[in-house]
Length: 371
Ligand code: NDP
Ligand code: GDR
Image (cartoon, rainbow, N blue to C red; front, side):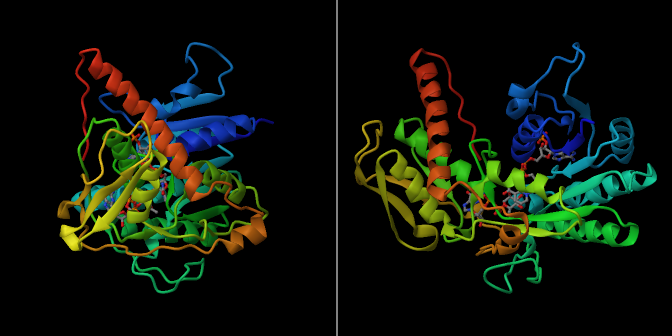
């Protein structure tokens, strides 16, 4: 029998990688997308199947995590073997601007799905994965962080995800459901949203190298993160639902770098060496040397500055995961190093920036929206 998976957040970074992964495994994949005024399917367009043909194995449904009835209807129709709850307002800084919506979608949204499973009597059939996060550790109580490290959330996003974490544990214990949390540390890719720091950096460095942008404005460059590749992490999401008993796992690389270092690694990919000088809001990143033929900037130019509007009311300064439980029990190890990740992201953004350069050269307007 073909297994059926339902992915919420299928149009997001992880949703796209997971859908591709599950299709390769022979699953029938259903995804929930929300209604938007423009198409929001860029990341899954390569998987698209014409709804007019029969025997499709990738099917999209309109729905929203803030709308119980849409979720119940979809779960009833699909009768999934596995649900991956990846949908969320996933931007930590934005959660300070939209705390109530974030709580509704990221916290209560998980409850709505669990209740849909229960209302439909699917507790023994449908396995449930909740996209939990290293942001739960927030003001860290232990380094590195593992499954037993106490939580201390530092944003409306993290508080909403804390509710989702515990309601998943509660439904497992109360109703015997196969429901588990993947406590995933930051994971990135060329498909990462443009306003998360890694993608913001690789995109800006590529555009600066080609003379399309002058400067990259960042917030807290001292923040330390444990960055992995999304492609490696979605495999873990699937593995967690294939065990005999449901359990929560930390997924991380076990290696940590600062935002500042990430900037330097990304610039080096294009032959630009950056030196950081100054402190706090005075800190700048200056071009020290240019060896790459493609790079148009010159030694001495300031190409990175601090803009306090990117500071968060409460910051998570340091995150470093201990994935040894996942290594031991799931035989899982990330395949991609930070250096490989940076290279893949910079190359993709450099290709996109070159396309924009050619558009400009041909006399057309190339818009540059960035936050
Ligand atoms: P993205 O922001 O790339 O994707 C989020 C997805 O959720 C998008 O498909 C988005 O739709 C959808 N979505 C947002 N709000 C709603 C809603 N109300 N109803 C239905 N769908 C909605 O996130 P990632 O792929 O990076 O992350 C996936 C999950 O993992 C998220 O829950 C995130 O919080 C969590 N996580 C991510 C980590 C990371 O480093 N990437 C680490 C730990 C946890 P649209 O495309 O229309 O915006
Ligand atoms: P994070 O990711 O908050 O860890 O959440 P993000 O890339 O937004 O920030 C990482 C760190 O970089 C600092 N920073 C900046 N961040 C952004 N976005 N923009 C900037 O200009 C900037 N300058 C410095 C931040 O302050 C922070 O310390 C991500 C999301 O994917 C969550 O959904 C997920 O749960 C966690 O990772 C694990």
